[in-house]
Image (cartoon, rainbow over all chains, first blue to last red; front, side):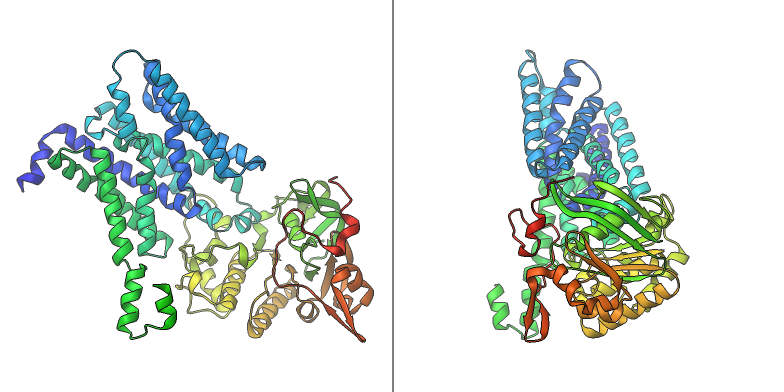
Length: 291
Length: 272
């Protein structure tokens, strides 16, 4: 039992638990829509695009949340606008802006002469070092994202599943698309400290992707993603405490392990289907072909 | 008039798909939009549904400009445009028909669940509400989408190829439901590539080939002149019998450079 309770005597560990489970919750909820919309790449792009905002906030001694939010939301809206104009494919617009913004971040970063250990935390995540103030900011922003999803969940679902039917019935599909891009951007800002720019996409995509292997109903999918999203950081933080490993990477590895388990033994996995077929004695030529 | 288009032209990008279309569909009419692939059937529906802006001309739907009565419109997309692996059940899809009227913040309640059950029963699927949509047959999928439209209780039904790829029983059932809706004063507009279905199940015809070639009652289908002008080179005469060559795949945004010999004389027109 001591192995479980010992870390809890450290306030930094309790703060890290609170921060990373909140991040897991928000990421799972937003990530569910993201996976269904095929926007996984967008998550990666917007997290990198937030970097110049973080560096600029550091240089100007402003709050990093503000800098990251301005950079990520601005990039999200720009990607939406460019891809809606129709001359470029969406993924092309994402590729150009994401690389450009990240380069701007590295450029600003390279101009800093003194020690910049804090900024490395944003690249790789350093949730164990989160301050009380940052935790409060994270919780407020996280609750804001959840409240917005709570208001628009039906409309987002309808517009994701059938944008034509939703649009004809009067839902503002384009506005909902922009709103969703902003939600992704804010979610990334919430997650930056916990897992870092490079690994945020895993927090967004992996729980929802795992849930997709386990259920075919939207409500259950979001629930399963949320459970995975909130439990993985707890397991990951303990593992990183015991192994003295990087916390963000450990959390992501836990999520990836859960995904792999679901892939192999889940009800919709190829392996399970194969076993069922063998049991049913129906290893037909077609089944052999699929192996 | 439930739908009135005057001198409407529109298209995709800089490619014009419909030119100078004028159509008037009375309240309670049951109209089939027919025409060749790429002739603009789906495009016409999208203009009425406010999914594609008119470049020129005026559009009036349910007595107001576009968008004003959107909540009274139910649009059913082509089956090919739907992601059938999406994690929703049949009743989830039908419930979506209730969302626009619910508005923000309100969750679906008892009344909505009753409407969903009634709509599923009306399309002959009372027990399949829990089925994931991908696990349904082609005919059942069309039934679910019609049920979604019914659950929305609309004044105007816009259905893109509702009878494509369904069995004869489903086609008959869907037609009966649409006839009943028209009979109680709802306006129904459906595209179809199936001229026999159009003649059997609909009372009015709009023939489209980059513009409205003809409109009138169902007997238009048997008018050789109208068919020749609508289908052009796709129309084949075998002795004194006439056949329409029209492949089963539908795409109203065909690739650039795709040639349709039936509309060669309209390709010269640029965007308005």
